[in-house]
Image (cartoon, rainbow, N blue to C red):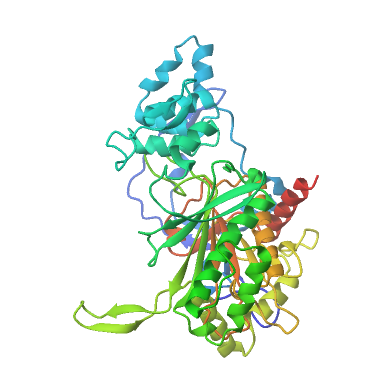
Length: 534
């Protein structure tokens, strides 16, 4: 089985120790000058043209470690690169964004700032995502679309040239998106462009969450969704604008997740004909409803198979026109449910079937559990937890930290997987109860466990933001409602995108290249959380 977990309680991995010969097949030699050193001595490329065969006596070691979950591929850690990070863990950090103001630079050079309007489009797009000056961004916003202004020249909305049923007057959609998602843009422009309900279209608001002065969130229905049956989006409202993780509060994450729990429980309750207490529910009512669902005789036979939840945090846009992450920066979460069955066909629409089972990512977790049990006659996640607790470093050093856990309480554990994907991956996982049973989905998660999950997600984002991560994809692996497995936990994977590791052929093959040991990343994440408590 392709996993680094074994019943022995130790992570299993391999080491490439390259030593090899290369037959030289080159037919031409062209030694040329590359430049000169400070003394004027020519620097040439002769080293690129060896005279004979090449003997590589010892190249850098490479650690190869299969992901604990086989369907997530394998991680390769370069020893030389990782050793440098172990000695200087501060290297595991992205540099802060520097201040950029073209408006101010033009003024200092005695140029007219209106020259911004005449920049080539790729430079406009670049400025839209990198500027930290509201003056730059306001000018770009006005160039991207037509606004309606009040008597003080403040934006109060967009112009709709085709009337109420038409679309807003957006002149350059990419520029509009890029500037509206820059957190340094003035809030009244953000509200008019993308945040006020209706600014992004006619999606119906079907729920909300608010604590006076603390948070305010709308729940939108996305009817024509990429998910069959539609999905829901919990978006921060126009009086609670959040573009950065350090602006996100505990009340915000509680509200975002409350809407997810509430919508999921209500949909299941409707299928089971359970009476609802009202349109908007308190945390106590939500827990009562959850317990009613779990105890219902038909709970495992509903038309809904599993939950689907995700969070794309962060936005970026390249000057060449590639959107690099989420559709918008404003903090939001999306969720839906996956049906048990849909109509299936074979070879065309003439031969219908009724037993096509839609995909749920949590099914892959269940398959791992079953395969591991067949192979070892042991519980995969109980062995996994034992292995994490007994972890030792791959580099064999006992003078450095070997702890993979970033944060935990009695309900959940936030940790660095031994084989990370996307380099800076974190995982949040439910813990077993005293009988060894895991909560595998949000219906099995008690009120206390849901609070721990919410806090764990916030701490994970804060830890990643403390290292400089600005784009993070988070996904949920949940157990099917019909499953009787008691050893499948609910898992969240947080996968940052790094500037020089956006994904290429290696990642497409599920080969993830890493430049640090997972223990060192866990240590700097704990450091980020410690700094928040100062």
